Length: 326
Image 1 (tube, helix red, strand yellow):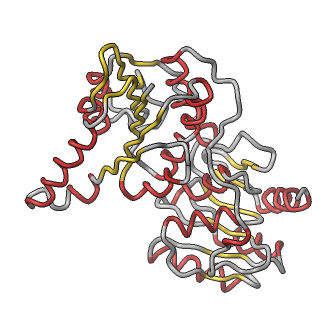
Image 2 (image 1 turned 120 degrees about the vertical axis):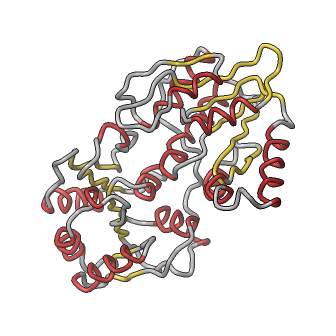
């Protein structure tokens, strides 16, 4: 059996789609699984050794230069690569017009199926027009967890129950391969940055948490100039805090993978720490917890709720509990 997964973005959503691979191979051990993903997330999918072939999709870059001959040639090359294989199943678990077009262009064997979402989740960017590319559209509860969505779609299509904890297929941290930018001692990482201001936790809260964790080193990554300034503000108030240099996505993944404690707002890097089952505190300030909370391990604590950020005391207590449990 040959299976193609279409989930192109974003970081957290691609991560949350990974458990589909383990589910499919558990039920069909001889199957091969290929994946179409935005080129910036290829390295994340590559961490899962059970994905056979990754087909990069570069719409974010292509749309900036559609008038150039080399861009159009690259797009034609993408579709040639996509159509090299015939699949038994193609799954689009994103439900957008762009992912529907990819599904529509993919080839299936006689009797093969193109399976997607019949509806979106609350607050998702689902586009109903994507259904025109489906042979089967799977309805789900509008409040289905982000990790469960793809798993349930595949389970319904291939007639198997989804009754195990999610397996992201990610490698265990290798202490001998610790990156040079990481301290030798145990550290906490604060994933404080997020594109939407309402999802942020207050500076004073981060500083109070950092002081409560002292003398443990606190590492502060950033992804934009505004986040770098925020990190410097936090570092000024936290003993033994360090603002990191700008990291590549995979360096940020390494940062999450090796942390003794990860604390972060509702953002992709926080969810990566949870997927690695590092001791993680996910802080929800202005997004619904049911949608992305790490609910597969006691080493993950989810605090706050839409419109109700957690207090410093709650987060400090959870951090101490996680640290004492190691």
